[in-house]
Length: 418
Image 1: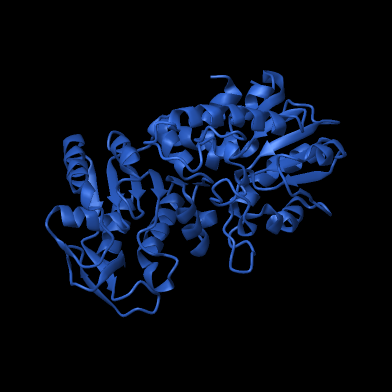
Image 2 (image 1 turned 30 degrees about the vertical axis):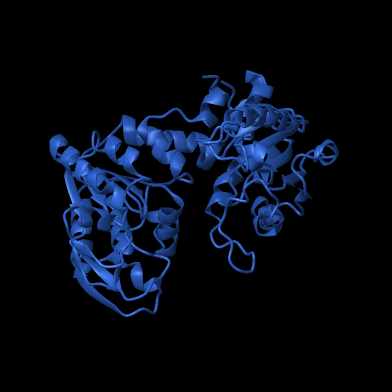
């Protein structure tokens, strides 16, 4: 397999799939540039070697239609600053950028407009229900259109570099299908992808115990696959965030207005049974910081997670939960964190997430390998100033979880020819 260090970029145009799906504030300014910084080494290497650079990415979920709030034009100046170049040219239509790509000279950079302004990027039929008898025909037609779209993107460059780990679990036009239009000597993984794959291997292939995983977030359903998989690997598992209340409800608890998946109560009980069967220590929040409104300035108090009064909702792990989480993490040698313990975006409800982050930082200082993955978890460590106190911060959420589940990621398979 070709590597980025072995490829001769001089005089070549390289099209690079990055993950610049960065959060923007109400003024269109970047709130967290972690993903841009993650791609910089690959992009700078290509420029330094004498190549011309074509950057492509998605932003948000525009559902196959152009939308100003998702335009990558908003970040082109920030990308130029990150790369240390005077200008990043911008192609306002990613499927009609051939002329701009052909005119590109060595050392120059072209940023394509949001790939997801075209439904062909994701390759899913638009405006038709899966139950519709015509769906399969529409799906087949869209797959053909997806190949054509990928072929257009491929026509812009001499080589393809996949460096978007955050989307590597999707078989999209720009992450996997495009690779079919380059031979093995002209497609490769970028530095970020190589680092991400190595980080996952460090967790799965060289596990130092005790191994603890912290799974947060609002829904059990979105994490059930990874939770079940982890229960066969970890020694301890912390389940926190909104899913806490689904578990509490499964045991007949009162959870007030807290988020809950009523159709997943049996799943929650099944997770507990599997943990017990596998000898995994399952740690959950015994108490919560509850609020009378979903707002930072809401009235608050502490209550047992299974005895939340009507009109109130759990928005963060309580003080006892924070102690238990920290104690469970202490002494562990391999740590995986995906998902916050509460509504960390609100300063008054970030204590649980901060306690987890601080405990991970302390364990890392004592020799643990800590892997932080998923947008919210990354935002947490950045918010609390802990980015340099953990072993590795992954740019992928879903991709990281699927890799840890042992699934083949299409974005990697397409490069390796698997």
